[in-house]
Length: 126
Image (cartoon, rainbow, N blue to C red; front, side, top):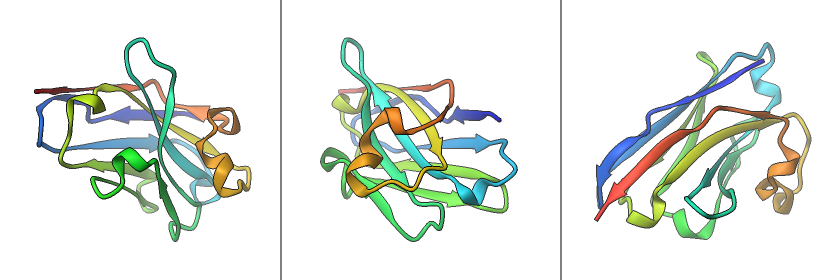
């Protein structure tokens, strides 16, 4: 079982990027998927999550209205569309997956996720 994140790069402030996470799991629909990020010198933090059904999405306050998480069941992909990027969005972004049924407050806890991708670097220049 693997998660492979891609799509990072260098972008100017105000620009957009779309991150992808390919999940090589047999029961993709059973997983809640999340995106986390870690900026230099900082702890890893929650960015967004989407339930196994795709019906519910959750975001940290700093990205609400700018980022959108979605999933493609046919191709076992999870996306993070990032618009209006800011220099403070600069970080390594990780996708993660869990089969646990989590309450909303637990979705932001990295310890609740069992599977992790390798990370993709997003750099936003001012």
